[in-house]
Each structure stands twice: as structure tokens, then as C-alpha cells.
Length: 331
Image (cartoon, rainbow, N blue to C red; front, side, top):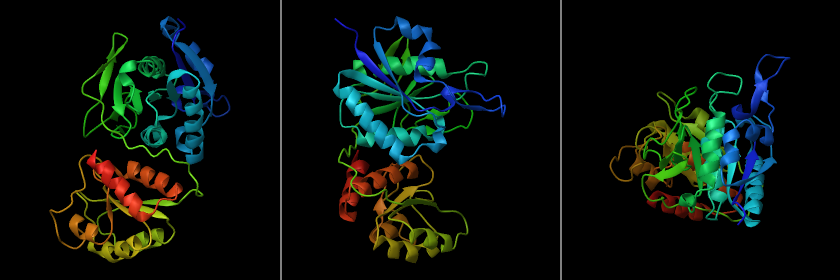
């Protein structure tokens, strides 16, 4: 029997960086094959690895077009017999690209996103270990149905819950609300709990790229900048205080905006839900939901922005978007 096939897609990022002699800094330069060649242990795995040089960009420069094109390429690879896929990229945007891929991925084969916090020129570079773990995870039948996961530091995180919680640590990726799905040790995947339900939106993106704003509530903000942003948006996410509270000066702007475009209420904390019916003062979660805002539930503002972007790009109405967030919150 031939070995199962895992597809490797390289996007660039720290894991693929080397020193630029002209500037002295590191830039994306290594190919997908060069990444694999730096990990001799991959040759001992009972897997057939097929490499794809997809992009060579820092994570901060990836776009929606890049990720939707990547999703299509991965779908093609999976339809031609791959049991899973690995994406290597810069860690700046992993928590967002992984969730966007998860929304677009309707199959059971796992997609594993990984990267590195230390570039290959540094002592203790973590890229080879992360790539090795990601390939094992992508080939593991235990992750069938998991959708898109993030694997770094031998931890497996659901794309919906993962966050980059430190700017430099090799243990930067965490899932504050749930903890990791599992870990890898002795060359195997070990899950802590059953796989969670997912929200999948695999329809074609038919509309031009919508403009979805993300506005963070801060102390003393009078709403002037919020109003200016809202006027330029097709959809809006508010990263509110605590369980879903904003300054009372925001209320009129948000009510007016929610009558025109979908406005999603998330928490800027990133750990814990937006509530529904506890507080009733102007600018509270109950007040804002009654004025037409859509509750993000446990989704953090970055993930909520991605979900609303995809739904708007599919031509969904505000009512359909509210229903999708309600379903996601129920998960």
C-alpha cells in the first residue's frame, strides 16, 4: 500500500526567513522543499509529502485573496487523494488565517497551520519541530473532522479559539477560553476531549471584497472616530468593554449604523462571552442588542470580523448574518 499523502503549502513567514545581506534583517526566502530538507526526521514518517510554494510573504502582508486562493488549492489537493494539508506561514496572522480557512473548509481532512517564533538563523529555532509536529497531525486520523487547527510548541489548538498571546515566546499560541485540543508526544496526536462543532460557510464568494471595520472601545472615546469609520463600512465589529459595553456616546451612532449594515458586538478581552440580558444601562449589552446589534458570543473581535466578511462576500443579508452568529454562539 502506498503511504498516505500530505500536502505542504508554504506562504513564507518567520519559519521560512533567512538573513538579507543588504539589510542585515531576515526576510522570507526559503522554499517549501528547503523547509522540508531542514527536518531530516520527516523522512522517517510513513507519509508521502507533496510540496507547494504558494507565497513568500510575511504574515502581516497576506490578504483575503491569498487565503481564499489557498483554500481552493488545498481543496484541490484533498480531492486528489491527500489525507491532510499543512500550511506554513508567519505567526502574525495565524489566528486569523486559520479561522478563515476553517470557515471555507467543508471536508473532514485536517488542515494544520504552523509557523515559527524564532527564525532559522537563531539558536533554538522552533520551525523544524513545529513543521514535524504539523505533518504528523495532518496525517493523523484522530483529527479527521477537526477542520483547521493550529500546531505550535507541540500543542494542537482549534482555529476558532486560538490566539497569539505573546509577541516573542515559542509558547505564544494559547486558547484562553478552552485550552488546547490536545498535544503531540512520542510522534502521536493525543486529544484531551472530543472535537468541537464548527461553523462552515463554503459558498462561493460572489461580491467584491466587503469593507468590514473593527473598532475598539476605549476610555473617554466620544464616538466621533467611530462615526467616521462606520460611514465607510459594509459591516462593523465593535470590540466592546467586558461583557459587551460601550460608552453611552456610542449608542446613537451604533443604532443608526445597525439600521444600515450588520454590526457585531464582541468583547475586546478575548476570553469569555458577550452577555445577553444582565446589564440594562445605555451602552450595555442588553441595550445594544435591542437596538439591532448582533451578539458575537464567544468569538473574539478578530474572528467575528472574518465571519462577517465571508458572509457579506457571499451576499448574505443582515438577517442571515445574525442567524449565522446565533448558530456560532450556540456552538
